[in-house]
Length: 325
Image 1 (cartoon, one colour):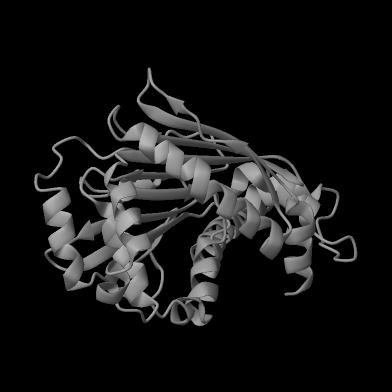
Image 2: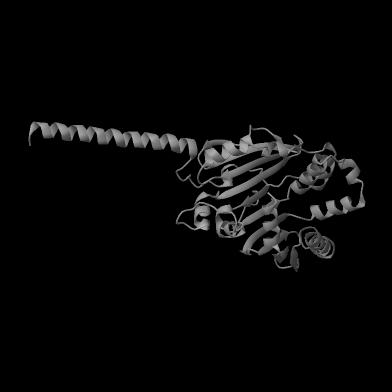
């Protein structure tokens, strides 16, 4: 090989190497800025503690095909040769979760909002933090400056809600001994799931905090007969679970399980079936045009209320809300 050709080949190899290095460095910079590469799978359990007794988890990625169906036909989304639901499945977060636990002595409900973003996490963080999402939730004292993203896939914010001092007496009287059992966790496999471990009275603490956060006096509310009855209902709940799965664009299947005991469970079932459920059906129908079918029977062998429901009318409600944006 002639010397001149060898020099040309060496120069080409150097240029090609420099181009590859530049491309790699460029991609890294762009990926750090925008989050192009897929983030690792991280669940809310990474942020849960031994005190986390309230877990609400929603899985948008699993609902991609349903979400695509709610997009109005006149809205064009540039997806190229790909289907909208396939694109959404690659972009939607795997999980969005809200974790909470009551700190009665500190008079706080401690909150953690978690998102396992899949792609574009840095952009999502920037967009949310520059919006008014956190300022709109005035009832919550956010202790982080919006969302934090210490690593890809781990997007979270923390805050708290004040617990009124007056509810402490009820909590310590009804739950004098702290539960030593590990908190109940999400079972998984659903589109959305809520689990509340009430063996330390977290439902009552949360209810009182919400009353106060909405500008009402817990002391005055506590004096009402309906609230006293509600506290008796809350006391009989050990663990409550609610799972929701979309069946089609208009229908959701809902499963409810409330663990209690043989002494108080049947009375709890009577109140739910005879009072709470009829009120909820009327509210959903009159306010949102939704139809709720199902019941809450008591299962003696499992010491639990096992409810199975069908909720219809979702498509019209969701479409209406999207068009109103």
